Length: 329
Image (cartoon, rainbow, N blue to C red; front, side, top):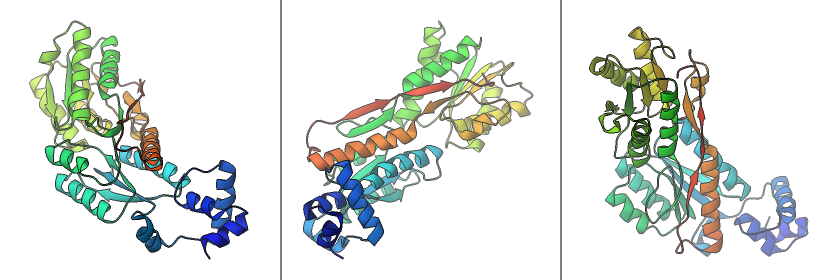
């Protein structure tokens, strides 16, 4: 079975079939007809010949910091939905927040002729900046705002600020913060500064915000950090956490200490984990639209591939959020 055979069965030109297989521009009517024939026959292009001819294969490399994360799952689902519609395969690399492994995946994916790369960003380092600059294929970053690179990211600062404002509206004044590593601009710096700005807006001293950085976004770290803050600030009446998972650990520590969450102490996380709707009380949080982030990143990358514009202006897109109030405030 060849491209010519598929074209005859679909009643279109061989060029149209080629554009379909390579994710090129094509009317939805022709795309649907060709898809039906391809699925019926089980046709698969010869990827070896395709690589020899174009130097690229219809694969997009996706580099993730941790595939066990709920947000990573949502992001990759969004990316996959766009790539599937354009007949691209997704090649996934898991770094487990190892900077050297991240650089290794960047190099390996280029050697394996991927058409482009989507990097689910974490830490911005000089080594990563140089590697991105040297990439031979277009790259889109999600979750972070890196200079001179196409990016799709959340408004972490404003989201954390509004979440803290909601807590202040519930009468909390002695608020503490459990944050993340400030090597990470989005979750480390932007979220912490958002909390501090909300305190300043309320006439409080944001610079004196009692805070602690967890070593990982885990329940265990949330519990440890909360226990330490209870010792340092026994009269605290509000806790904002960098993620929902950290907040679940804080919730456990607060209950162990006899504190009534939602009554004498407010608690909030960020990320809208499914578990936050079934805890007692429900966890107040920020909902980011991670699947849409993945979809938008894939669209930008595919557009860069189609228009060959990845040497042109850099696109950076910020997506919105929703504060979800539950009983823990």
